[in-house]
Image (tube, rainbow, N blue to C red; front, side, top):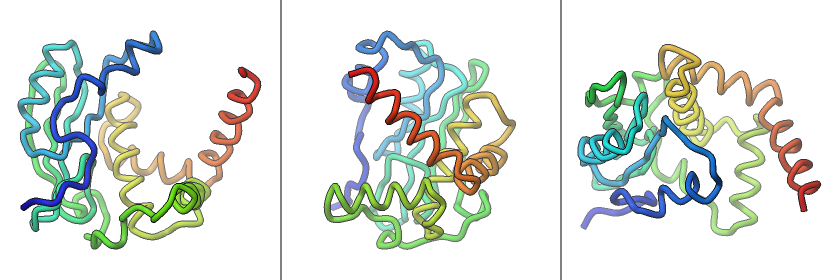
Length: 182
């Protein structure tokens, strides 16, 4: 039996509630799928009007699937760009990272532990493979935003944002805004 590590094994209608409920529309998306049929999902997203988007499925070759770009093994990426759908596979090395073990990136055992992991990541204190996987996925988001021409260029921006403290400051600013909207 294959181990399921991700959240979405298929395109779930709940995946689209945020845009409907918030009134914010998205024309680009990085959709992580814990299933390797990324082409089907990309065709569905394209039919829903998404362009310059990606569907990704990371795996480790031993049956573990992740609904994100993976640093524990290859990642299948199906990209919708300018109306065309193309699929490729990348490895962590293609993005400048070494392959990690699942134990290096797994979640903490509690909400508090996960919060601490998150704070260490965005403050630049964590330099483990957890940071690598955050940079890989953040780089892909920056790439599909159209700000840069490659995932690697997006990774550079994400790393700078974390390493200069901008990411941590943004979280603090967000919390302040949220507190004042109550």
